[in-house]
Image 1 (spheres, rainbow, N blue to C red):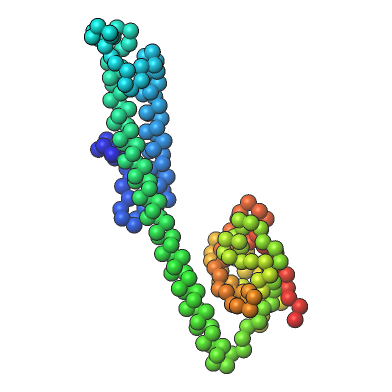
Image 2: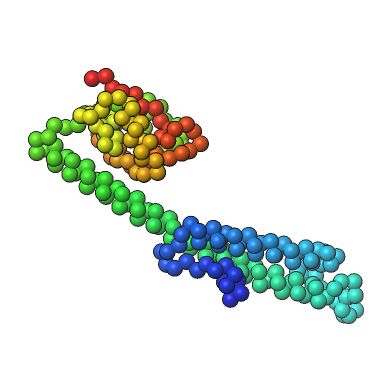
Length: 223
């Protein structure tokens, strides 16, 4: 990117430090450059559609008198510079997106490691004489694209723990509803039994296109 373009964008993400606002600013700059390129092409179009490559001399080698040569040369020069700026901004957008995705993956890996450690610790506690937790509720439907679906919940999963709710303190679905309402936007540890295997999930109650904050239906199990 030229010094002028770099100064106007005001964004130069450091390695691993790109933010969503950085990417939004780069996209704004990209759109601004595209608008400037179009404006310069409109200038060329107004000069008898001369374009970028048509000759500026007539068949006898004299400068054409039917177009504004200064406007055409200026517009062509601007388009070349702006196209270079556009390539540089697109490269920055790509690098910033890569950095952002890499950080997301690192966070997911940390969350998974914490969940696995927590599951191991819970298993150790149970092996030391604590009574194992049993399922108290079951998932009987999930909306596609919902927070529950994104977290990995599946139909027929039997819920062993839902945040602070477990078999020992579960009384009704209102217990789960209360936890959800107080945890909007915050990750909840959810433990389910699926085909005889225990799975630890991270569910974030979030507003989405469907109803509620979870996008799934949970029913109590009759024991």
